[in-house]
Image (cartoon, rainbow, N blue to C red; front, side):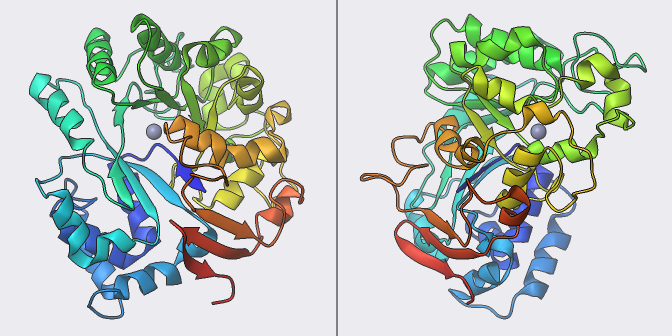
Length: 391
Ligand SMILES: [Zn+2]
């Protein structure tokens, strides 16, 4: 399974932490950059990671990682990381600490921030060559806005406090030039866009490219009007959404997110089903630690429009629920397409990577509340069994 999400640096740090202390330590020591390299938490996280390990030495980190939550069937973490990799060659990366034997795939998209110059863009292009057997730099991450609750989502009309009227990029034309430069260089972009104006602007930006070379992606899409739905498929832009975020809102609109937007925009919350029916590629994710990273939970929330197990909670916009198959596709075939990896991932087929997760229940047909607790019987990465249920 592929976990697509919109991790900011902090989120990426947290994900790696959750995957196991040794992964974090290993990552940090290999490239001397580390997922927390640019935030003050780095020292604390690394020391916590060391404290959680059972000892040093090659191979030990893997056991710790697998003792953690990784066994839940996560096959690939498509994180986003800020900062720059040091110049370690691929050989060196691969040689050290058994990098080729990572028990999962890491895919990292460095950030592109306002004010970047041509050298900075070229550096982002150069970084795309960094890859190895189980980890790669793939794409570049942008933010066009913030959050609804924080008053920083970019909205077509202000929220009830008069906020949400500005993009994160002070010069939105500069954003367009950066996306265009990367597109021409064959680099996929993923843009965090939560508000309706933010989503529209990303689509406008791709449309302005003429024929985009790459399949670009929009992350979140929390509220969007009818007129934007069909543009995703028409422009070949993938949608990446986090259905379990609906649990932070309430069906009766009594929550902060809904209050700020007002009833009309709150009725357009996380339109997963409408986007699928409009032909969009729809990858699912969690945005951990905003919501639980477990794909079984997210698949459940996509089908139920509430968290699995919370049977007393009223579903939020139940008409936007996905079918079991659509939800599974959000973590497999559609996630692969969103990442531009459909030729090698997301399906069980000759020529594809043998990255497999076997569950104790049918992810399509089992009741969503039950599937959220399903056993992970087997996990395979690149043809290697890295987890068996019960071990
Ligand atoms: Zn985001």
